[in-house]
Length: 58
View (cartoon, rainbow, N blue to C red):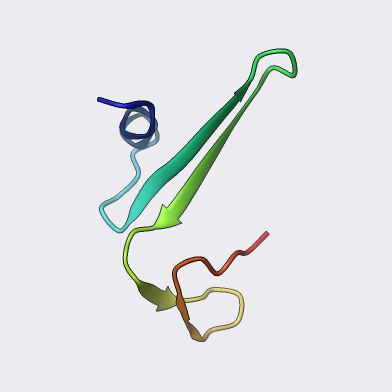
């Protein structure tokens, strides 16, 4: 099991999403976990349009 799979299980990420990246900052005492929609497109909760994967919402 790699680190992305580990955090997916730890967080209980569903089948429609996946942990794509994990960044550890030991000095800053911070772990950033990036979760992406696993399918090619989805309805964006921000703009309500069907968006391709990679559409970023902050």
